[in-house]
Length: 234
Image (tube, rainbow, N blue to C red; front, side, top):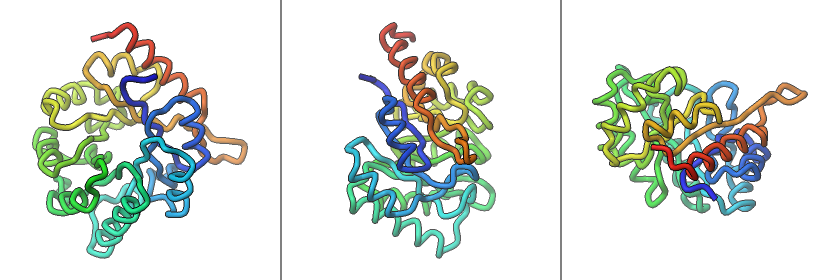
């Protein structure tokens, strides 16, 4: 049993169930992971919620890698958040930026308000924001529970210095969820700097070139974190 979190970023029901079987103790369900991820179909969210009692968080993003929303897009986000809440999802993964890539506090706060009592993760739009210290304070001010980030870099390995800084800046006011290139090989290093929540898809292309979560990739991460927890690295 894990004391900390391995979150499987799953782009299908099949991938989610594979991640759960491999030992992940939370799932973020999305779709179209090849392009960066979007909100999954509601029928898939509903089906997965009926199939498992695991903590289930849903990515709420109308268009891949587009974090500046017009009014119609924002209205759709709020609607999708409320639908997830109604069927018993545990959390949503959201976020909004301004034209200058600062955190859109007004829109993000409204998303958080619509989501409660679900948990809220601010997604990796944070990694294209522009001022680390100011950005994390804004995300915290919005009331988010988690920040999914690679340290404002393309991967956790490149962002390790910033991740360490974010953990210090957060001062337990928000949980840092490391994501972007996380695997069993770098979990120990991330754990040593203070990360306790790890986000990975563990995907590989199948015979038809579709990305699917592979049992081995998630299970290796789970076993490595279990090993670290037993040894209690600090």
